[in-house]
View 1 (spheres, rainbow, N blue to C red):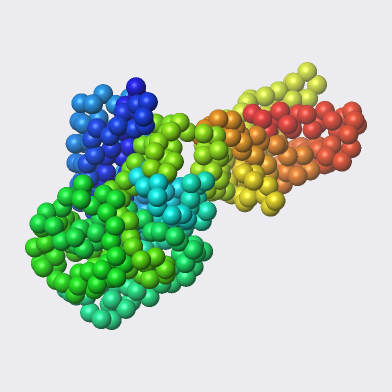
View 2: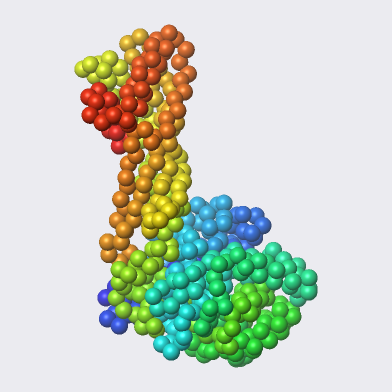
Length: 487
């Protein structure tokens, strides 16, 4: 049996799940949630506040103790919208690495949607009709994922969440009519552009803190009871009625509610409005609320399990492929290429010319951030452009030539699924005439002109190599260039 830990770091909360993989699925040993408001002020400042980092690191320290206590063998830490938006996210990543020994994975919106759907579907009853939109309202973003037992059909991560919308629009306690209308307009604009057909929903599943709090409000218990909330079903009309009452309350009145978490009371108005506006776009009569959410999804995938109609079974290649089609984007592929390119390499000194004695070449190459796009008509295929600058020192007998070469190298990257969530990357190198090369020199002596002439003839041979196969010297020139590029 394998013990894993999954950590979901959102804008408002950091949650931990420790689970043990068994023959029947995932046995949850620990599930904790702490309100740290990591995204405090991010929408306005673009930075993680220092006091927010202190709160987050304190929670992670406590989680590290639990991870040690339960002898966790593997950890996955996923960070969502707050760290996607922050300019000082590197400080947060370094703090996580120092405390847990793993770097946080900053999920893209599509990845977040796919994992949230996986977690929710692990807890959906067999009899619940499909397709189902899973609605995950966070502090900084909201994910709406429409899918069925085959996987995700449509998904959108929107930059609207309880903290983000409250900080953006609400200045009074309680919110004024004008402020509420501004929040609703923002929500509706995002839903209009989402591309997810909520009218196609046969049922709706709500997950995460905003939805579970709204469910508690409809039930009105004396204190929050997860067992009572999990898989509870609520009439949509009652949900709308409760949201109207909740938005009209002051923060003090919300804090007096026995089920209300103190860290959620000030921003729940905006989050509840998101829930209500989503439901108004459906034709369903009831809302199903689940305690299982993105955290279970992270743990299930990390443990090598997948959800199927309320059960967990061994993950299949089909599920891995479905997940990756949703999660893999040109930006993620370019990020992987950049990591492979690594740090600035230094080449040389290398001998050139007859006997490699005519000149010595030294070069330092610095790779820029790559960019690319998906190849039309192909699945999991991308064209990636890799920019680089080479600072070259050519020491010949008569002079020393210094120049820079700006290079743009096109690569075709194809990704295939070898086994569940195992990727095979195939990179097709370019032909010599597909590489863009711009050379600038700062040497002024006559010898530079001679060397420049040699360089020009060399470039001409390289261009010829791209057009003529089998020409002896051109082929050798292209081969030299290929070896240099490979280094």
